[in-house]
Length: 530
Length: 93
Image (cartoon, rainbow over all chains, first blue to last red):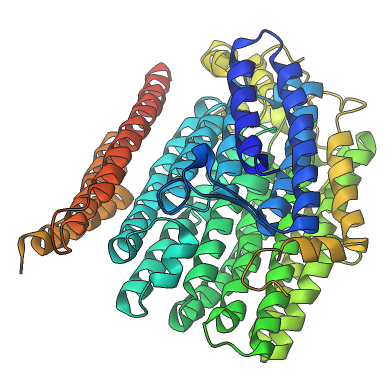
């Protein structure tokens, strides 16, 4: 079983190479996704039963060799990766236009391999390399969205690499003071003081950029909204989480810094409010969903101010208890957000393709044609808002419990306001879908406006091309899929197209009912373990 | 101020200048160059940190800097491809 952490990384990496070379890319990728989910379940069971799995590839023990460590956090997020990747791959297999290009399968698997490496790496420099692998894969996936996605992809790449540089300097600072790169060993030797605070600040800024913590979030809505339908869920549900897990690990190992934790708390609150309000104001459906991710990222970061007191060396039992409650709450919310946001992006992509427009206003009347898809979107929104009995509700409850115990009332207010804003944004979209479709010709009457900006899907681009003639035909050529029909009001929703999203929302609700094992799993091997 | 400390300060200045330029310039090509300046500053910090302790400079940090260079080159390549495709697309319009 000590090979588990290595297998979790190697399987998608080998799968990516095979998927790039083999003729049946789709079959290979889905087979790998099924096997990955199987491995993730095995990993979760092993960690729950025997505790964390430590391994050092090649027999070189740390501090000399590279340490890999599969703890509860890695196993929990690994489960999320397995479920979401399989669901998204099945969606992309059912709806070829959702993938954007034939390269999708191997690029997605490379990104998954990078993410898995981030999750199991216990060595700071390996984390840096894995983060870069994940970022490069994610940027290439965004670029599959066609010409309109290239500028957001470049912006994402430049900003993410800037974050990596900050992280790299932090890694070098840790090494310069301790002489080791293995996080746990280095943390024990690191002296308190200005250097520790500088390291933490650099890590927080660097990974805050990659996690899109307000006000470092500006790259996210553009990149996540421009990406193809089968890419946005992977980015929003998974890639963002990878960087957050690293941030959490470093904070937990180094013991945190009270002043910095307050700053993070303020930014997290601002993220929840700003992201929620911005989501409400968006006119583009996928941007609305993307801004909701900015708000949800704020929830996860609320963990930092709540848990910091319990992470310090001489923390009392009560403080550790609060830290554990907050830890479980935030991670459960993270898992729930992954499931629900993936479902939301998938249904948003399906709806946009169905009406041939990426705008929220273009969705008029779609509830009558695709009721299941709209319902799934609504349930996913309810899961994000954290209504019972969903997993997010359990997580939110735990976070509130921790906040009330420490008297951090502002966290309670933030959680409630954030939930209301998420519910309002979802309700706004659902309301539009139920309006009578009396303005169906809206898309055709504004071809020039939608050609440049809002051509989210291939049908949209082809629809505008037929309307404007040769001028817009280049747009279609650069679009990956032109085999889709080009009707005036989009295409019909396939019979099975919504199923992956439905399964994801069912999992997001059902895991909330019996989530005690999950809450136990995510603390195994962490500083807040009972 | 000793030699390594001077280079450490220089590295920090170069990194900051590169980062500020990266975030403020609208031109894609300049942003890619600014990213490389930031990277150079970061690696300067790494190399000077390896020499701040007593005795011989630490080879591990220099190895990290080498890996950092390799990654920066690859990322620059990817960024240049994106820049070229963006500009090709603009010409078509």
